[in-house]
Length: 192
Image (cartoon, rainbow, N blue to C red; front, side):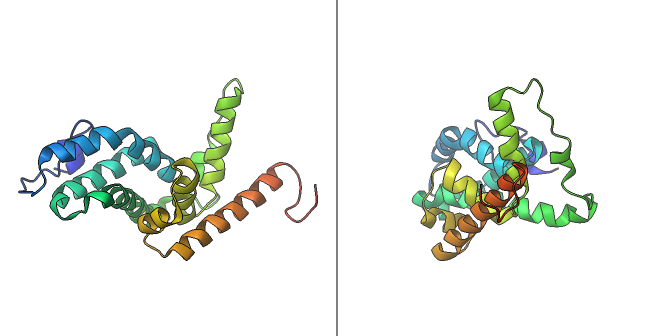
């Protein structure tokens, strides 16, 4: 039985399925999950692009955090869990990459916008644009602009230096610019 099957929801508590003695009490873990569960779900969705994968990634990250709860510094818990989400997504992607269609990401090809409401259209465009980035670039952009994190936080979550985190964001923004100008019908180098 997997951790996900033992506890199908994130809130109020996601436990690793194993009894563990921790120096910090279960209540502090419960408080963390209650305070951050929705934010972690949104972060995971933006990183994975899929609600089911996001739920699995958050569940696995919280299960891992619970098992190591006593050894995680309280000021590093958020970064630890977010990094676990990114790592789980990258690992899952590597396992499944041979199963994906070779011509583009089929998930984003099937996305349609019903009734063309501005908010839905914007969300669709953001999802498609994020889908065109590498996993690390996507995580860096989500952390920087969606969660308003500084480059130190991005570096901790992505497991890189601050300079590498800045480069990830810069390259991601450059890739997004190219995609946006291409979508607008302008070649990437052409003045508008």
